[in-house]
Image (cartoon, one colour):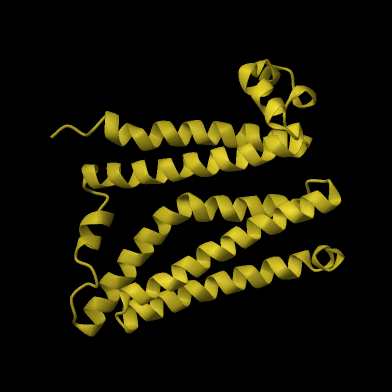
Length: 210
């Protein structure tokens, strides 16, 4: 464990480099070789590397008992990969397939991609934002559950905080968070989460008039 703590930044950088390489291999496999099914292996590897980053952050916290900038950076990277990164990836995926198909004078790898990513179409945009918001919800709940477990240390303790949310108004000392930095980060994230939910679902509940 001491070895992991000593090389934590090196391990983080190596994982990020490996993640970047998996995306490059994904692009080569799907756009150059035209092997869509094979390319999914590299997406799975990317997700596995993201999960390893999460585990690494938890291990470092358990060993040090402190929330540092290292965990904060990990959280930012993982949050982006699991929320806005999905949407950005879809756009890049379409853009590359469109450009390469024109360059090689062959049809798009998947003709439905153009319909899927065409944000000028309000219905298609609503579908994408619904998926993105649900992923954000799952990630938000999972990480908050982890934070609460780190602070409350038991199911009964977590249940108590769920039954009584008065701690929200009483500051960090009365909260289920183990660290003031995590508390402040979570409050900011909660605000972003609410805004994102309203914005994402506005496409569904308030469609553009014809």
